[in-house]
Amino acid sequence: MSLEKMRDLHLDGKYLETTEVNGILMTKLISDNWDKIWNFQAKPDDLLIASYAKAGTTWTQEIVDMIQNNGDLLMCQRANTFDRHPFIEWTLPPPLNSGLDLANEMPSPRTLKTHLPAQLLPPSFWKENCKIIYVARNAKDCLVSYYHFSRMNKMVPDPGTWEEYIEAFKAGKVLWGSWYDHVKGWWAKKDQHRILYLFYEDMKEDPKREIQKILKFLEKDITEEVLNKIIYHTSFDVMKHNPMANYTTLPTSIMDHSISPFMRKGMPGDWKNHFTVAQSEEFDKDYQKKMAESTLTFRTEI
Ligand code: A3P
Image (cartoon, rainbow, N blue to C red; front, side, top):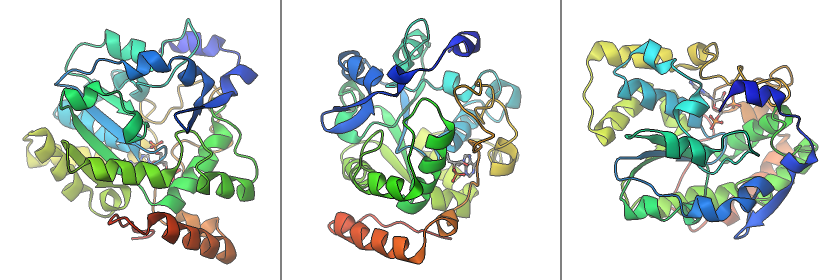
């Protein structure tokens, strides 16, 4: 995506219109482009990084890129994260490039990004048996991160008040729909497809162990030295200052980091600084109902 063109973009109401695609809230721009997105042709050597918004996607992208480039820092700084890994459903008005345009122009092997729930993933990814890395993060930290992101990112709807946002998140009335359905939907798919299902909290607890899982999944071998280099350069404190990973190259009319930085806290448990005891109890009660049938468990602190 050309940053020059991005700078010329004057955001108005039409970018913020939302509508549902098969019951899932999306931007209207995505919905209008849905036929093309659904019919996207994946290739067998595509790698897809999938997640619910704010689950640690950018972090996973950086780890994967460093692995693919054998720890070569300059290579990993060749472009912004959003240009290195096309965000397949993200649709912008012409002349801006949408995720599909970027993906279609990119030579193989491609690494792509999506926030789509499993049931809305273009079927060619399943048909071509693409490898998929899914990263999940506990609901409360995801909610907090998504709330602040929605305040600073002018391309997603305003979150309203904190109280309103908790209710919208619980009801799945946020972009890309329900967190609960998303994590469960992908969890169910992992038994039938080549999906590495990772957890943000595990990555934070022991990045070396989790990067080794990614290496195995990608069938890559690297030296201990390169592994340590990757751990260092993908740590929160280093990524926070990497303009090719922290979204600061976007104009403030799109992301205003003075409202809340994209690289905000980068740790599990920040929800405790936001939820009151009553809000937390209420959230947990609703959570138990929505997650009761699932074998999926999350840690809300480490
Ligand atoms: P916080 O808002 O809680 O800080 P995504 O990339 O899916 O949009 O997720 C963004 C969240 O991941 C933000 O969470 C961001 O700070 C966090 N993040 C990004 N890079 C990270 C890293 N290297 N280590 C830990 N967290 C990271």
